[in-house]
Amino acid sequence: MPRIQILPSELVNQIAAGEVVERPASVVKELIENAIDAGAGSIEVLLENGGKKRIEVRDDGCGMAEEDAGVALERHATSKIRAFDDLARVQTLGFRGEALPSIASVSRFTLTTHNGESDHGVEIECDPLTGERHVRPAARDRGTTVVVRELFENVPARRKFLRSAEAEFRSIVTVVSSYALPLPSRMFRLQHNGRTVLHLPPASSLRERIVQVLGNEAAESLTEIDESSGGTRATGFVTRGLRFGSRRNQFFFVNGRLVRDRVLTHAANRACEAFDFDGHPAIVLFLDIAPEAVDVNVHPAKTEVRFRDSGSIHIIVEQGIRRALAGPEEGTELLDSGLRTQGSGLFPPQRYDPLPTHFVPLFQGQPVVQPPVQTASATVLDEPMLGDLQGRVIGQYRMSYVVIDTPAGLRLIDQHAAHERVLYDRYLERITNRQPLSQQILAPILYEGGATETAVLESHAEELRAVGFEIERFSGNAFAISAVPPELLRGDVESFLRKLIDASLDEKAPHVTRVREKVCASLACQAAIKVHRPLGGDEMARLTADLLASSNPFACPHGRPVIVDIKHPDIERHFHRR
Ligand SMILES: Nc1ncnc2c1ncn2[C@@H]1O[C@H](COP(=O)(O)OP(=O)(O)OP(=O)(O)O)[C@@H](O)[C@H]1O
Ligand SMILES: [Mg+2]
Image 1 (tube, rainbow, N blue to C red):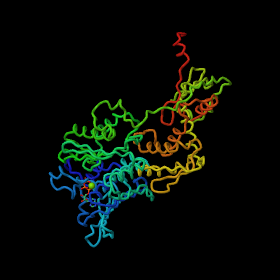
Image 2: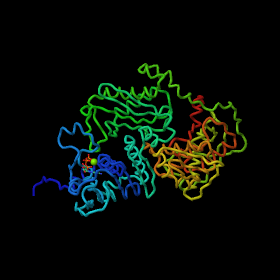
Image 3: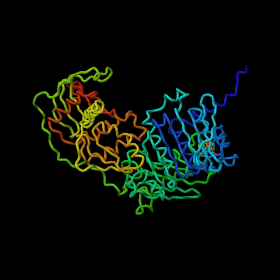
Image 4: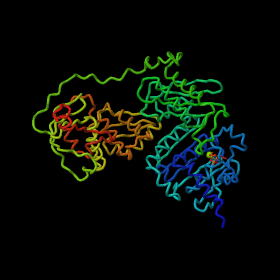
């Protein structure tokens, strides 16, 4: 037998699937692209278990004739390009003819389609192991439905890398809303475990669709971007005034294709850096460029592009966003570097509440910090030792740190981080023991977000209830909150929900793994005493004792340090006593 052989086609497809199908969100992406290319006016995505168990994408597009449907499942079968030259002018989202066979090779795959012309539709079911197909007639209206069950069932190594259903679900929410953005006239709906979590009915304009996705509060701050040079034009919207905790609401489209591109994100960052503000605006930017000036066939997933002249693209995008952010008053003299010093004029500089410079008396009395009861779980071997825990609170430094005199030296405790740790443990315990504590609020708080936010919040509702919230979705994207955990102030509820959503959607937040931990961490952060707040002696003593009894006194739930010890010998050395 020769040593070199041509691989069987099933294996070839599975190898290709490695590039195209990384996770449930990439399946949803490919199927939505196909539906859009088929001219669908309505696209529905139904998921079970974050798409790990089942993904269904239904459209009312052009459908396929029976013989085409069979061919569509072959590798390199496409209706979208015919010759090399077409590649340079491709208008459709797909063109490689790889998505369907790749997905079918790593899942239990069924395609049902009808082109509205033949007397019935057809259903094709594929066996991922043998590649065998079962074809039968099917009754349906014009359009296509693809069902993908048990993704990566036959590729255990891949299945292992899937994240929790929750995390996979969130990525899919982002995919669906980003594809919906440039296509306001089409209807998108996303259902998860039987509940509709995102519904975007046809909108009359791009602005209206952006508001559907980002929420009503974006409506007033959306400012148009329109910049062109040569044959290239950048259009779209940026929120002037409204900021988010991460860049998750920044979307870039090149000739209608959603891309992740360094040149574009860098240009956007530069534009924003010209202004002194916290947070990140939402950006929906469309770059229209001569097809010859951009190569879309750079990566199998087609999310990257290569510009022939990236320098000029950078200038147009940066300039367009800057001009929009600066607003009509300042829009004319853009490249004047005075912008930064001028400030955007939109935001007053952030200031802490002016507090009386209030002197906290030394807290003498009895030693207030009792050694914690050591439990097995509280001592982890390679953690720093608590040392001698007898200590005396001697004051507060900068209204932010509790200062303790211990036999080993001086100890500083970050009051916010310490309280965060204490509250985090408390919330986690309430959730785990299913013993929520709630406090009713007189007039319920109404919280309204965009479609993505709503979907995320909805998916956290169970944990929020378990920790003490009474939260109900009552219409569209609005929630009513009628009770909250007692530690949370009414005025902090909205900010808490916003931070929770940001933390959920921010892929880079490494410390958060499970929803309940994330809810507890965000809640603890919001409810914890802030820095720059004077504390009484009793408060400091209680906080310190609670901290030392917590599951990990050395780190807050986000992993930042809580305690800093300055050893007595070091202090003596500074005074040349040693
Ligand atoms: N929802 C759909 N409605 C109508 N036709 C479809 C649909 N999905 C796929 N097709 C047909 O099947 C063909 C193969 O789809 P597939 O996604 O595998 O490749 P592609 O979209 O051409 O390229 P790419 O691999 O880049 O996505 C398409 O070219 C299209 O003709
Ligand atoms: Mg495709």
